[in-house]
Length: 478
Image (cartoon, rainbow, N blue to C red):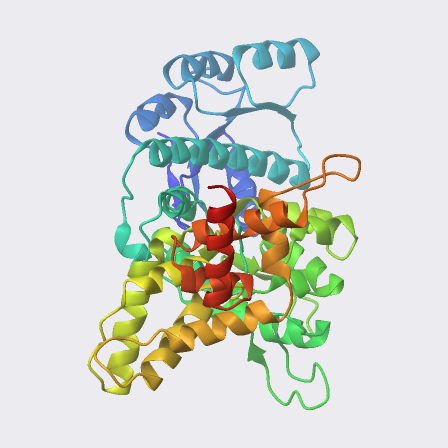
């Protein structure tokens, strides 16, 4: 009878090693475990393989061709027939081209000749596992994206939205959260990137901690010490060893905020952590293995950074295995009533006041604003308004004042209207001043929902001046 041995490790499907040589099974298991692949099953008797596969799901089979009882070539055909999606790596002690070709035609994933180099063996197993992960991710994506509902809405309870675009992002996050691969979260300042990082951690099912650190502006030494820790005597003042955040996030998630500002030397170290699952504490020559999941975020344009050479392309593409882009508030204005109501309640409670009523014009006013700092800015505006409010209905004065200050800083909003409504080329038709003015007024009224006070604010004129232009246009067109 053969023996079955499971080396328990991370909760992934095991790799099954089948060989009648116990010494090979032992050395191969040690090699894979040292490379960070601890989930292994071993069998010495080829007759036990098919019964095992009927009751146990495995990631791949490493199969020796020359075994007693049931030959490896026959077993390969049976496995491919009964488990067509299961990758099989064939091992043989003879380098025979005809045998290799026959095995590959039967459906073997790869063909290795004994004695196989450890590096090639490990590389082959990792390729199989990566392929399996990719297939599982595709299956998960299909399942989640075709389902109209978010399966775990509780994971997104801190993100208030009624937007279909945001709902699609939730489903994507659900699909990729359990893969263990890096996640890059992009979006403007204040859109809630850390909330999405926490949702990834919550949905991943990881039992370890969620740790967050802002890496913007950290030099390489501080970055390395913060993430990887140091050994005693690593530098002057290092009187004792200290664990870094990566070690503290074991079995959990490390969230690195503002990754776009990371120094290149730090990028190289983090790339090694992601690809090799290991790192070096300061002052140590021994690599430490890590199973912490890496999630990063930035408000920067990563494609522009890589194109300019300020961010390594290999690091960017490895980092963005899964990419979540969060739209700005101005692209989901339907969320404004819900967000304003939430921030009003939050602010009133913190100030010990009764929640004021919301004037119906407030939503229209806010919908005309571009919110450069997104939810963070909206929360601040609501807090200021409630703090200054003295009546039962929320005053719009502080909102008008703050939005007006931004509009008065330049002519950006007017330029945007011209570009969107009355574009013209250098050689083409040029509108008259009267035509341009009428276009601007019409667009301002459209954006303001025909509220003349708000439209006047957008145009940077008084309500009376706007009213004169409206009357003049009406008289001119009869």
